[in-house]
Image (cartoon, rainbow, N blue to C red; front, side, top):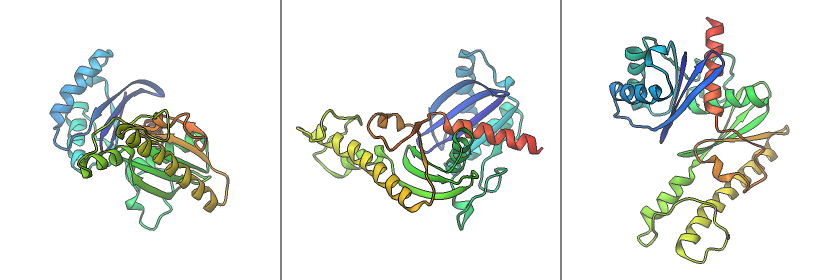
Length: 257
């Protein structure tokens, strides 16, 4: 059984696969100080609720963007899964050309998304990954990673308003009924939500103007579902894109031996 671990800045997603069959998926907050033993206690309990045990795991693959967490996840795999984890880097993914001047600067999450999107939808395309940051990543017609855009995530924008302006409250992010807010909360929600829709639409338009071929647009990430129905610039919403990419990379590594 394969365990695929996607360590993001805010949340980590953990999924189990039996050959090509997805079995279960869970989400937990990312912590740079949570130890391997603490992860094992949590994971053993939540796996037991679905009828699985730590001993069932034979392979582990990790995508990580929080350097301080990698030590703990490596130890988790070594101590409790009895296997050396495969850690995704720009140099370790079989069959993916990284076409930027410094390939090591490409985040593991961006590369995994490129693989997952290309396998499912072909190329060329752009992946919009909405999380702590909002990434716009270009995938060529052959599946190569061709760079992209990184902007602050929608939650960071709302948090910045609250932190920097003394009279602005902390509010939930949701789609307001009106663009023009009639109170402080409504005005903040409209500014952040519709501001992000405009950011996405504007950047996608500029990307398409610059890119020489027609592009599909695929959205994923923890808050991507907020944007469904709010814009027609996104062709596909796929919440499982990153985990699918990790599984595909694992297949390629195994096939390569």
